[in-house]
Amino acid sequence: MLSRIAESLFWIGRYVERADGTARILDVNLERLNQLQPDEQRLVSRQLLGIMGSRPDSDDFGLGDLLNKLAYDRVSPTSIAGALGAARENARRARETVSSTLWEGLNTTWYGLSQHRKDVVGTYRFCHWVLERTAMIKGLADTTMSHDESWQFLALGRSLERADMTARMLATQGVLSAGLSWVNMLRCAGAYESFLRTRRGASGEEQAAEFLLLDRLFPRSIVYALSDAEKALERLDPSYQRIGFINDARRIVGQARTFLEFHQPDDLLAELPEHMDRVQRACAQASDAVTRTYFAQPIDLSWVGEVS
Image (cartoon, rainbow, N blue to C red; front, side, top):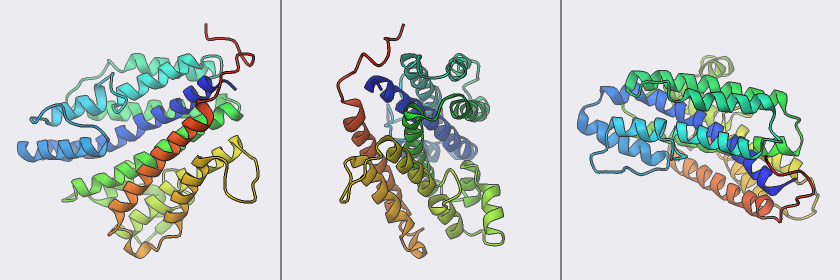
């Protein structure tokens, strides 16, 4: 398929998942941030922005600036609005490949971004609206597109971004550790009820961290997301080798997954920051490897016509 279309599909998956993950992180931290004193509020806002991979514009960076940076800035792909706008633009470029209902879902979501208040209460509601819209978009992608090579690129982008966003979410626990419980972390990932059903009486911090990192059956755990990325890469390049892998992305993702999956869980909490840094680096390196392998290829114009 066209490398530019494959790249657009990959980034649709990433950007939609980024909007979803950022909305979850902002939602779970918003209430506590609003209750902090101004000095502490500014400090935590800067720390939270750093975890999300961005930098403050000024020394007097506060809660209002954080809301704009992570929710409403349409230029930055770090923000919810920017990510959804970038997903829509990539869908426009791959218009002949994505389904009409998926395109309409992204387009309608884009036009709905301006219909929200930009204060704390408005942002809280905005985050919940984004979670509903991204869930619908992902459902439309899963049920209205053939699960062929095109869909595998979208699924690959989504899985890598989900692992990265779950790692960032877990990293925020250290920033707001005073009073921010693991119950909130589980709720942020939509994992609270699944965790209770799986673990029953065991509900401590270690069990919650273990669930979000290592559970093989919960879709938002890091190990599950990395496993999904591995499966997509295997389907995109099913060639068998007796030694090693042709695709660097499979090696990087596989190493990250096995390091977590076979790591001794007893010291998981103590080593959580190192684990999260390692996962984020692996996702970034795997994304670069995917770009080199699949998107830097000559374009074959005989496959499909240009976008009108």
